Image (cartoon, rainbow, N blue to C red; front, side, top):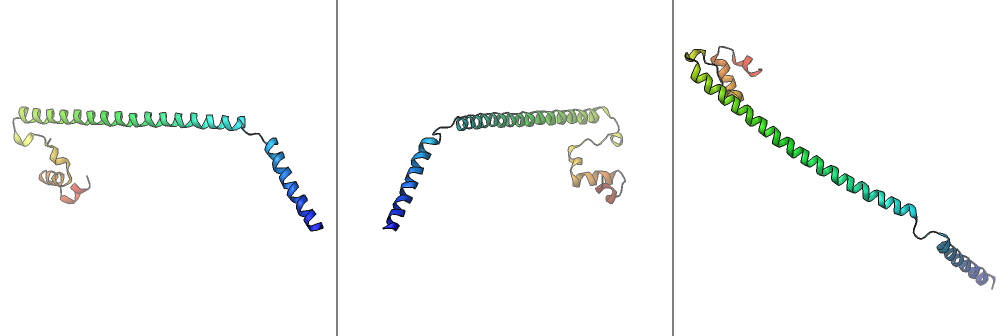
Length: 122
């Protein structure tokens, strides 16, 4: 009978501990609410930051495209002016966009008298 009594006291102790823990422990901590509020504010701030970064990148890309187009227009103007204003074909500067690519650039440099190996490294 001592074994049954000991088992009964152990179960009674566990049950008492559970009941006391339930009443002593705070059910809804103010700290938890504060942390949840802080997390929500941080997530909202991060979403706003991502939106701003995204729109900034879009604007930067648009501005770079506009700048590229402006340079292209300047190049076209210079090429047309050089073709129109320079009387001698030998004195005309080479302002063709194709001379900027690797194969055509090497050919253009070779025409001007530089060796091909030197032209590749420029």
